[in-house]
Structure formats: C-alpha cells, structure tokens
Length: 464
Image (cartoon, rainbow, N blue to C red; front, side, top):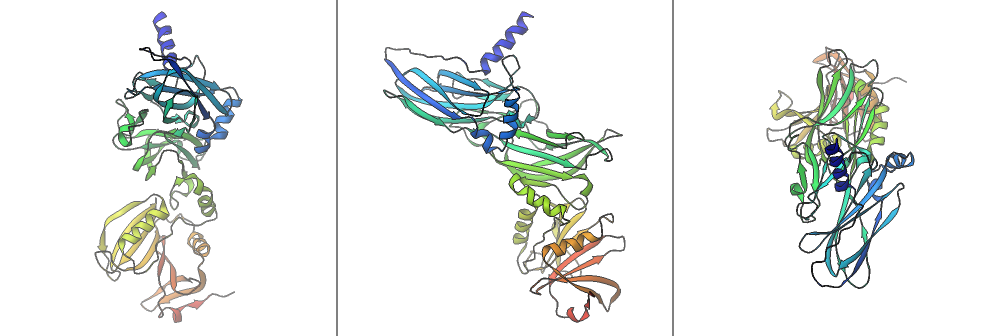
C-alpha cells in the first residue's frame, strides 16, 4: 500500500507544475526576472469549445492548468512553474531569480480533475528540452475538454523584467461526431468512428520548438494497430465532441456500427479527410438516409448550411457540368464538392455510344458517372447521378433539380424507346438539359447533358 501511495504522489509531482527550481552553478549575479501572461480562454475559443469547458469549470468538475518550463541555452531545465484557475481568464506566472541570459520558455495548458485524480496528460523527460514530451496517461479517446495546447518563445532576461505573452496554440483538433437515426428502431446500439492505417495512434508530442512534422509526435508503442477508435455514440447521446492529436493528409476513417442482436460490427462507410491542428471538424451521418446521403466530413463552419440543404431534400450529388473539361478538372470538382470521395471503378471504361466513363461513389447507393470523348479523359460529354436503391423516395430527384434551379418543362420519349417517358428539365438559360429516367428495378438516374436541339420538339409540355 505504501508503494502505491508513493507512485501516485510521484505522478502528481510530474504533472502539476506548482514548484520552482532555480539553478546557479557559478558566481553570476542573480538579477533576472520575467512575467508570462496566458489568456486561458484563447485555446478553447480557437477550438470552439468555450461553452463545453466553461460548463465544467462552473460546476466545479475541473480546473484549467497553465504550466511554464524554462530552459537555458544548453537546453537544460532551470525553472518550472504553474498556476490553476477555475475561470477562463488571463493569468500571470512570475519567473524570479534567473541568471541573466537567454532562455526558451515553453508554456502548455490543459485541464485537471483535481489533486487526487490521475492526470490525463503526463509530462516526462522534462529535465532536457530535447527529451521533454507530453503523452496520454490512458490509451483512450480524448474528450473535448481534455484539449491541450502549447507555446514556445525565446526570451532574454536582464535588468528589466521581461513580459512574455504566451500564445497557446492547439496541438490537435476537435472533431464532433454526430449520428442521426440511432434510435430504438435502428439496427445498431452503438456507432463509432475509427482511424485506419499505420501510426494511427498519436499519444503525445515533444515540446522542443526545433521539432516539426512527424518528428513532433509521439506514436504509441502499444497501439499501432489499425482501427483505433476515435469517438463513439450511443442511442442516449447521439453526438460526441472529442479532441485528437491525429492529423495529417488524407487519413482514412471508418464508421462502424454494432448490431443490437448479433453484437457483430459492420463497416457503414469509409471516408478520407485531412485534419489540421487548431481546426474544428464535424463528422455527421444519418442512418435513415444512408442510401442516398453520405456523411458530412469537413469544417464545422460549413455544416449547418449543408444539413439545411439535405433536410430540405437536396441530394448531395452536385456533378461537374463544365462540358469539355478533362478528367483532372472533374476529379478536382468531385473532391471539392463531396469533401470526401471514393472511386467505384478506378479506370476509365468504354461504354458503347457513351464514350469513356468513370464512376464515383458519393453515398452508399448513390453514384456519379462521367463520360469523356476518349480513354485519356478528354472532353467531358455528360454527367449522370445514379441511385441504385428502389427504397429512395421517387420525389427526391425532382426536389433536387428544382432546388438546383432547373425548370420542369414536361416529359419526353424517343422513337426507338417509346415506352420510356422521362421528365425533362432545362437550366434557366436553356443550355443544359436534364432527364430523370427510371430503371426496371425501380432505381433511377438524373442525366445531365448539353441541350440537344433535336430533343426540344419531342418535349410534351407540362400542364398547369
């Protein structure tokens, strides 16, 4: 029991910076001082979680901890201080009795549950700047209010007290996972978002300002496996705001649902996104619209407008209709408008009478198909939105085209296919023709093409 108590005390000393050390190994007069000012609210404002953290503070569930480490020109620790506060305010930390000289000040901020709780973040290797790092104490997902940030600056201490404004910058990003349709009637009891690939688990970071890129991060030695859970939601919650140190280009994510009856796990959808430190992103998925609406995976600032369009019945499909452009331009358009994307068929394939085509999967059963003049992807001829789910309401494509600004003109049929009667729309300038075509199995497509003058006389005008 004594050994356990000692171990807990040691962890607290390593984490809570409430003491000062000062080293003076020669006869240099001790005359230097500095004041470090930290706006404790700034970190949470940048991550959009001021209300979340403020609520925890007001309820007395935690405090904000600001810490300062001071290193000399040899990179050795000479002072360590900190302060705790129960409000999001500007705090000042005084550094006294430092030998005159130039120092590197490293400040970092997070939250604490109290002096007797195990810390979530662990400071280790602090005696030298080259080895100082902060890592997770638990192999788990990180709640949003556990966000952590740091600042580093060089300062010269001399006769007049130096005043340093520490700009605490987030060391990760906030991700808001939100799932609609996770109710008593759904097939799933739990839905989680996992990150795939090597080095999926980033457990910490080095404090040395000389480090950058991959050299900045501490990768877990015990959690390098694929499928690291990042966040999850239950029926009772529906959303979960988490903080993650994971960032980099085109990380692969999988949304996984746990079946209520079998307890088996099913991959619902894959997505790719680049998360940048200091950003706020949203992953939104609607189980009830999975067939024709993919998740939103992008900046939180754009989510409200996106969801308003979807709730009003607008399809996520927004195909490229810049006739004559090449495959590269089409691909750039799809990536920009979908925020995430997936190839259905990776190579152009020839379709008789329709040139060379390429498929994109933009939802579980919704695709975009583009036809080009040749196998090199030159000269876009037409674009098609194809739904392969007969359960998707028939009014969806009609509502979608009206919201896109197209005008319903009537129906059309062709001499060689008189049994096929397709509603036809035109753009306001009359240059783009759009048909809604049904398949024999109840599926449908929206066919976009430059207006064909031969089609205009075949249109049977709408009545009323």
